[in-house]
Structure formats: C-alpha cells, structure tokens
Length: 318
Image (cartoon, rainbow, N blue to C red; front, side):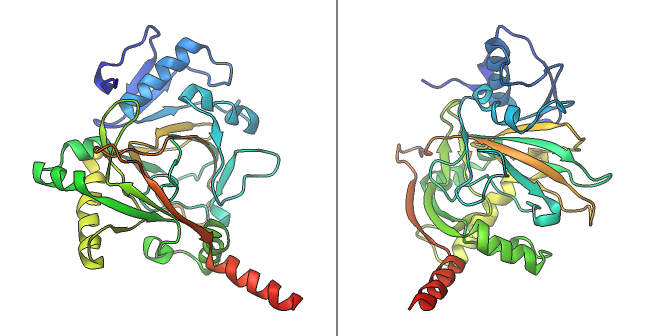
C-alpha cells in the first residue's frame, strides 16, 4: 500500500518552513545526530516525502563519522559511490572540492547509471564562497503531474539508457582539461549502463516521477535525433523555474534530498573561490515502472582509461 505524500501526518511537530512553492523546506530547531529520537526522525522522513528537499541550518557540530551515522533517519544505510573513492579515514563520505573538479553544474539525479541508485543524499557545507555557489533542485514528481496528458501518456511508455560514460564536455563546456581527465580516470573508470523507465513509481509515496538527467545516453527505440529532442522536452518541464528551489549555502548547512523525486544543479558562478562540501548517500531500491517492470543493469566494463592502463601493463610484462 502506498501513502499519498499530501496525507502523511506525524505525532511530532516540526518547525518546517517552505522555501519555494513546489519543493523545498527549511527545518528549524533540530540538531541532527545519529541518536536523534525515533519520533523526530519519523517526522523528518515525512517532511522529506512531502517537500523533496530539506534544509537544516547550523549543523556545524557534525563531523564525518556523525554525518555517516545520519542515514537511518532517512530510512536506510550509507552506500558508497560505484567509482569515486571516499575520503581518507571514512567509509562512505565523498568530497566535492571546487579546487579539484568538484563542480556538479549540470542537471542530474545522483548515480542513475546504476540500477539501485541512492534513495537520498545528505550534503554538508564546510567551505562556501562569499558569493555564488548556490544549489538548485527540481521536483520530478510535480513535473510529471503537470505534463500535458498526451506527454504523460507518452512518457509512461518510454525507457532510457543511463551511463556514466557521457559527453562530459557538452554538459560542462567550461570544464578544464584536468577536470575532463579526472572524469575519465576516476568517474568513468568503470562504465555502467542501466535501462530505467522514464516514469518510475516512488516506493514510499506512490507518486510517478520523471527519471532523466544528464546520465541519459538515449531514449530506447528512437533515433539519436528524436531521442535528443524528446529528452529536451521532458527535461525542460522538469527544470522550469516554477518547479525549483534555490538554496544559498552557509557553512554548517545540511541539505537532504529525495533522490527518487528530484534533480539538482550546483551553480558554477564563483570563479576561483573555494567551495567544499561532503556527501553521504542512502541506499536505494531498483526503480519500478508503472507496468511493474524493474530497471536493469545492462553492462559494467572497464572504462577507456582503465583499458589503456591494462594494455600498458600487459605490454610491459610481455
């Protein structure tokens, strides 16, 4: 049985202040910690189901270990990235440092090139530019709900191939050669390809959400031309300004988003100022389409850089 996000209630009252009309809310007067009481944790999960992104100011007491320990609040265990290594001394904490290519300025849902991608992401701000560096999130559930009926019917039938071996330069035209090299050698060190329904059923709320973003290689069954244009139609509905929330970070902020019902974009407008954030993700389920079919991991192979390294090693040992 599914529960409508609009009818979720809790015996614990949170101080929840909406930030935008269709997505995002600030939760006030809560000190996040791994030992947060069950009633407050339940109320936070319910607020996340409704608002899709929650913001918590003043969480500077968190360190890497307590950050990792927050995942049960959001209904799961921590999970590491399939290709990107964690920071030293942790098991599940990933760092996005602007000085080393950590600028995620392209619309995406985290790790959709994998079948069971994370259900939620927990991002903690350590160093924030004096100006710029905001993050924007989009609600993929309201985007689906507000599609014209003809487009909803079409989306219901479609599947798409997602991969981490995508055209990095086209999504980040100002990326440096060093950023591109790091993408090939680390992010795409193992190449995944997964087929997902374009419309998934949210496992907790029962909502239908659009599952797209920059990891989409193509919509299955269509030519490259038609796939590209149809992808853009749906993607533009997702990222309409009326469907988004923008957050101005401060050091010590924590943002948590439902990765099953959102996309996000980290705005790269802060030049050479440093922006340092750390992320822990919560393990998720394999998506299910409206026809009951599950997403399928189609392939997992070494990336081009790894293949070249293997060839060099083989030649050296010959």
